[in-house]
Length: 273
Image (cartoon, rainbow, N blue to C red; front, side, top):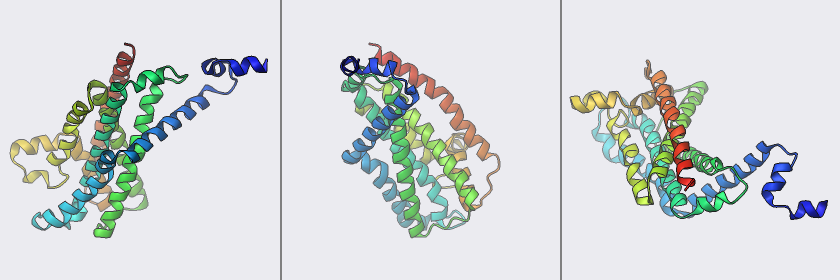
């Protein structure tokens, strides 16, 4: 009997193994998350986009542009929430390219021959992106504190801000997964994510929206980035939040409700060929 079990294919062993299937799924997911993190470390372009570029932008806006921009407070206290969300956008762009690489190079076809659920491949990209972006966010906040960022929020305010940031990162990651599944090449995936990187610039991230021309002001006030930034800024700096918190959550949840099923459908369609 032992010899028969030893010689049985892996998927047969899993099917009849009394251990819960959830444990197998968690084990497979951890392997693919580790794969995504190793790819980030080995890919200098991805590491630069995820970590170093947001730090460079923080230094640029604070020390080069900050002295010329009047926002009614220290500019670093105003701009850090925007840099945090911009950081998440850059990290999400890397995810789109990674997903497209897997689809275009045949890696997914190899994974399909293994006894793992197809969805775990996408899950690995999402979790790796979350970990990468949260790490980059921590670096940006740490550097900002060294540069003079002085938040006034309580511990609960910080927890709320971290929760909103994590929800935003999750949303942008799934949007990037969808773009990565649509694109046929890494270059195309990078182009699709340009819109994600553009949104924070036309929001309240770097200047108040009421200083913009009327057309841009209307767009900046009614796009998802502005209420998210105002919520994070309000929690960390004690500025009025109003209904921005509800709008921020509604935008993120609404986008996820649309993007996650669409991504699943796209993945099934591309892997069924």
